[in-house]
Amino acid sequence: MGPKKIFICMTDLDYGNRLERYLTGQNNSGIEVELLTGWRDKADVKEEDIVLSDNPKILEDPGCQTVLFVKTPEEQGKNKIFMYRSRDEIYKDLLELTGTKEDKGNSSLKESGIIVVFSPEGGDEKTLLALKRAGELSRNKRVLYLSLCGFPIFFSSYPEEEGRGGDIHASPGISELMLRTEGEDFTRGLENMVFQLGKIWSVTPVRHYKDLLDFSLDDIRRFMRGLKAQGIFEVVVLELGQIFEYTLDLMTYADQILIPKEPGILAVIRRNVLQRYCGMEGKPELWERMTFEESDASVPEKKEELLRFIGVEGAADE
Image 1 (cartoon, one colour):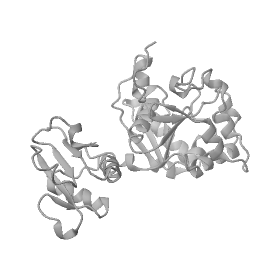
Image 2 (image 1 turned 30 degrees about the vertical axis):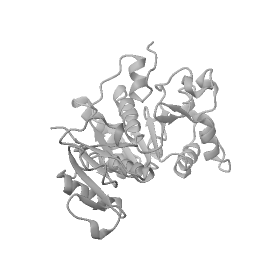
Image 3 (image 1 turned 90 degrees about the horizontal axis):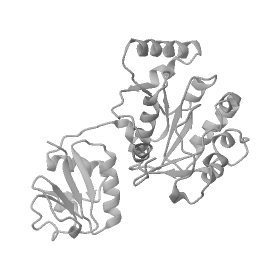
Image 4 (image 1 turned 90 degrees about the vertical axis):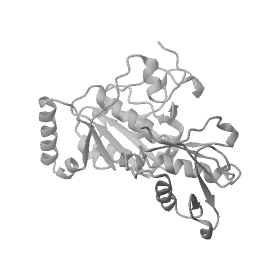
């Protein structure tokens, strides 16, 4: 049995929009939420579906379970929820009324801040995990995806809807952000450099892998402090490639560290080496903060598939 479909049809669209974002953000695999601007937007409703509304007329004969949002606590009762309370309380009452279990799902999807995705093994899994996480979080948050890889997954020009035209690598990017002085406005610089890739945002990566070797520890620290202080994006997904001199120093600024969990004895050995590196660098706590995740995403075989993976619909295949 799949997830229960919950339709939200409120006379107060702002309230309905906020509720839809919150319920979706719970990442409960037992429910699927859809906001309707009007009941006529939905032609067919299944018996197992659920309709939420503050308008009793909408709930008169929808052919499925209904939940009425009432405006005073005295009205609350069977299939009725008092709407002017915390969203957590509404969520718990909704689960109880609909007989849906609480499912934490992937709790990391609710977090904000800087998420560093790194792999000591290279390959596709790291990039797929970074893009997948950025795409999932972009449903409810404004997400910036950055690549600090020697061989980043990137395209030669801006998306057509961006309207900039020309070579993407001719514009300022991570190198310029990294080399800004402490007094310069990092947030303003970032705002002028970002462009949209589907549902996520990004910045031009370094032009050459040797640029990564030119960054000093002070550059790395300024860059990470700037990312933490900026207020444009709720989440920054930062993909790291091979280990370089300051990889572990950079990770200390992360709110979360994700590493794709590869199978096989060689992968186990590399993870053991990474743990030893953390200890040798005086950062054993980094190892404790690392989360190893198995990837369930298939590798895109065409550019069109890759574009769709990050939410660019209707992209022409090459």
